[in-house]
Image (cartoon, rainbow, N blue to C red):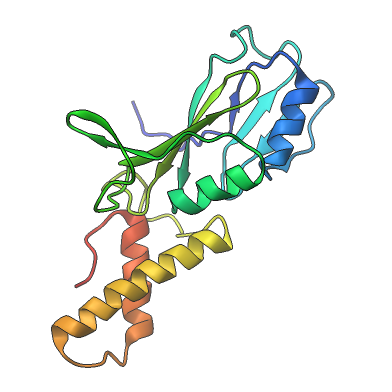
Length: 195
């Protein structure tokens, strides 16, 4: 089969009370999109995929959905949700022996997680991703950031790595903007990072 360009646009979840769900997702700070009557759609900040719910959109049992949200800083994202009045579980990380409390000690991508549910019990799993696995994102696509927070976090990681680069070379890098740009592009593409 020929490869076709497809992008996930909307995920439909089931809720028992549309007004209550609308209030909850507005509290998260997600953008409420313009939709036809009977459909409520929210888009998380920085996401290209939206969430829809409404009367008769799905035959699934309310609360049966499980979705992942990728964040660049799990601690900051969890804190922001708690500040918005959302109950968020404690942070944990995945190991070969199962989940362990706290952040992944090395802050490796895909390892650290936390979760929350909407009023119906639909589960949202926060997953910290700072470097994509190779091939996960088409590196020919334009690199972008979903929010100023994501860009700031990437700049901080690149600045820290650049400091280590200068320490290893033993001299100041006059082309630091180029080095940092290459670092951020490689990090987003999941390719080898510069040293």
